[in-house]
Image 1 (spheres, one colour):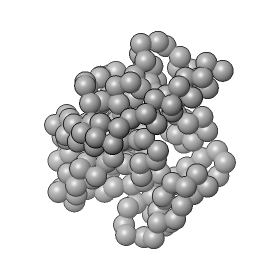
Image 2 (cartoon, rainbow, N blue to C red):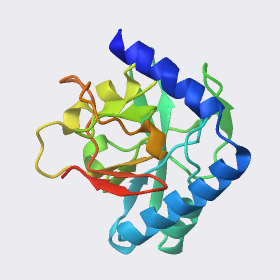
Image 3 (cartoon, rainbow, N blue to C red):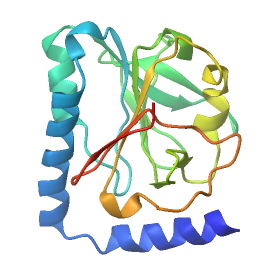
Length: 188
C-alpha cells in the first residue's frame, strides 16, 4: 500500500508541472544522457514511447541514429509480459493503455541489449524502480537479475521522482544510472 500512496502522490506532482519546466527539463535530461553514455559502442538500444509525464527521448533517438544502431520499443503481449520490437517504420498501434507500440515480429531478447532506457514513476534511494504497478518490466526483465553481462539500465526522470527512502522489493527492477534535470545518479 505504501507504493500505491507514493504512486498517487507522484502522479499528482507530475500533473502540476508547467509546460516550460517539462520542456526545459527534458532538454537537460536528454543532453546529460548523451554526455554520459557512449552511444558509438552501443548497438542494441531499448527506448520507449513517452506516456503521461515521462521524459521525452527524441534527442537520444537522434543521437543513436547517428551511429546506425538498432532501436527497440516495448510492446505488451499479454497481461503479464512484453516483447521489445525493432523500430523499423512498421505501423504504430495503441495498446490498452493508449501507449504507442510497434506491431512487427522483429524482437530482441533482453540479454542481447547493450543499453535499456526504462521509464519510471519513481525510484528509491537504492535505484529500484517504481512503475505504474502492472509489473510488465519487472517480469519481462527478470532474466537480467544476477547476470554478469547485462545491459546498462538507464532511467530518465525528474528530480521530484527520486526518493530518499527505500521501498523497493526483491522483484523490482534496479537501475544502473538515473538521470534527472539536476543530477546523474549511479547505482553500479
